[in-house]
Image (cartoon, protein in one colour):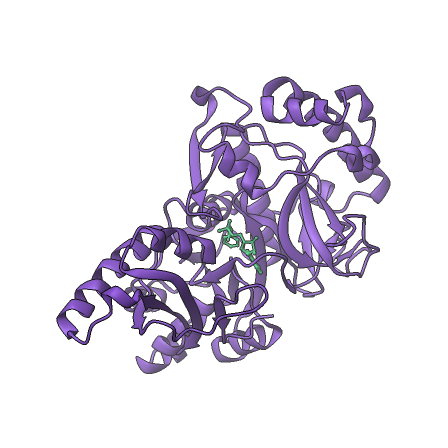
Amino acid sequence: MYWNQKIECMSRDELTKLQSERLVKLVDYVYNNVEFYRKKMQAVGLVPQDIKNIEDITKLPFTTKDDLRDNYPFGLFAVPDSEIVRVHASSGTTGKATVVGYTKNDIETWSECVARCMTMAGVTKNDIIQIAYGYGLFTGGLGAHYGSEKVGAMVVPMSTGNSKKLTTMMVDFGATAIACTPSYLLHIIEVLEQEGLMDKVKLKYAICGAEPWTEKMHKEIEERLHVRAHDIYGLSEVMGPGVACDCEYHKGLHVCEDHFYPEILSPSTFKWQKPGKTGELVFTTLTKEGLPLIRYRTKDLTSIDYSTCECGRTSARISRFKGRVDDMLIIRGVNVFPSQVEAALVDVKEVSPHYMIIVDRVNNLDTLEIQVEVNPQYYTDEIRVLENLTKKISHVISQALGLNPKIKLVEPQTLVRSEGKAVHVIDKRNLY
Ligand code: DLL
């Protein structure tokens, strides 16, 4: 079995020592290789020698998604482009993608972390795993793929989109594991039931993540599919899937702490929260070469537990996610910011800046409707004109989001005006 016991079961003291050594190296590395970090440290009067151990991390400034956007595309890379062997990208807050880059060693570290997660989920070299996260700029497909190969499993790179082919191959190949978003897996379960294939399924493990899911969904997947379902977490900026995953005891997600240093901060004071208290998860990448990040604010809300797990692993565990600090939505695994919709609509003169995003879940698939108010001078009863306008808006929005939402045009002055912070989203899914 692939299990990095030496690292995953090391004592807290040993781990703290390793983290301290790695942080000291990292700070020196970013100071000398990334102008952005040098300037940020200089602005608060810090030099690398001020960072002597892991506790000194609190002296360092934060990094945010906006910093990545402002330095688009490669401005935060710490190595020449020739050392980067892969890039991925995810949505930024205003429509510009955040681009992440990996050196050869980064890809190796990433595979190692995903391999640890797959192992926690039970996957071994004897398994046949279907990877049904999207392949491409999204980190899910290739991330899960490389980690599963490292374990030695037989990898079937399905990607997303063709559920019938997926279910047929699941049965024909005798797949024993599947990695995909939990909502997609619920959809696959329905397809299996409709096709009468359920009793031919050999699946044992499901490795689900990339979006929030409730304990109820977890149970439902386990009961309907007769598998052990695991929660895998990650984000592109920090690496991709594999930052953390839960083991067979399901008491929180073990963080690959030798590579990613977690802090849980109070969203109001930005001070460390006590273990068990919910706060914003912040990560420092201790070993990344291409895009090292110092105190990256994930905006994800969780709590942390440093006690040793029943499985023997000593790594800290974060709890199932409790929400986000910002307004990012995850729809069919795709990150969507309301501001992206706003930015796309600005260029369409026929509509006003008033819009409402309505997210729901029907037959276990996320649905997205965007209601847009037509400007009074362009509003008409002529159906053909409105249809053309709907097409035009569908096009700009799908370009901006990478999703094809249903567009519904509404008459001027119909959407509710808010007196405080504008409400642009109605999310009916109850995910947290
Ligand atoms: O979603 C990476 C990933 C791929 C993780 C496949 C797991 C499996 P991004 O597209 O950058 O990367 O989105 C990152 O997704 O900040 C969370 O808000 C959310 N997220 C990811 N995993 C989980 C999870 C990938 N297990 C954002 N539970 C993160 C809840 C999750 N939310």
